[in-house]
Length: 107
Ligand code: HEC
Image (cartoon, rainbow, N blue to C red):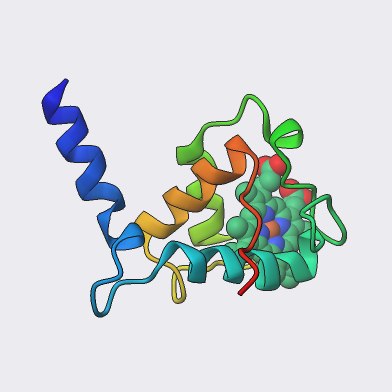
């Protein structure tokens, strides 16, 4: 149990900490809202791309979605993001999408 918690905090620390070089969660949220939103719709309800709402993705695993985010979907317009996103970020995005993606905080 404790090991799992340590693992979880290790997994998410690059995103939640503001330490140098780390990508913050709010930067990742902005990227998803803007770059992914250009195809999936600003509210992720779908456009050229399929909707990425909690309802639309229900039943899929975060791991499978993270693979699609990193490698794209061959034969479709879904591009690979591995040059821009780390595996940890892709997994984080996939998990947030499955819960209903957070809104961008207004400055
Ligand atoms: C150039 C347009 C485009 C951009 C930009 C884009 N996508 Fe996609 N995406 C698509 C299309 C089209 C599909 C549907 C592929 C298909 O027909 O199965 C898709 C599918 C997906 C799926 C699978 C959905 C499902 O129901 O299985 C996920 C997850 C996803 N995209 C996440 C993202 C994320 C996260 C980003 C930003 C990092 C992103 N996409 C950016 C076009 C795009």
